[in-house]
Length: 162
Image (cartoon, rainbow, N blue to C red; front, side, top):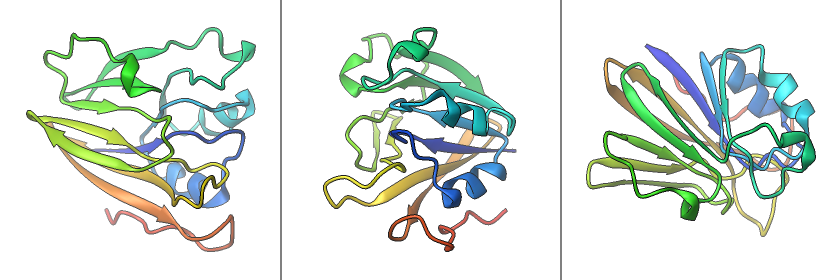
């Protein structure tokens, strides 16, 4: 079984609450708008890192893809920053992860999970600070939305129990 931390739109801020949750994960998916390479440096050591370039990622991110396809524990993923950039070819894809809107979205459509973990960076437009944790094993998955209360604080978000 693998535990995956799924984040997006950090915009240069990796909250301590988010980092604590990510430390318990085997892999991390970041759906773009990282804004500073130092954010990736803080999480690279945790486990496998899957990341795409967002519309606010500048020259430092030139080597990052805009679309990434990968498999974790038998689950085929497609990762993009902006949902509209997903190509037509999704055959075999079970999970599409995207960001950009800063709003959590989880919907199964035609057997495929469409997941936006929301934004866990600076608060915008009074929206929640969210991420997702996904447990995967043997081609099956379970997703949990994590909401971080308020601004960065000593509180940790709700954690997925092992």
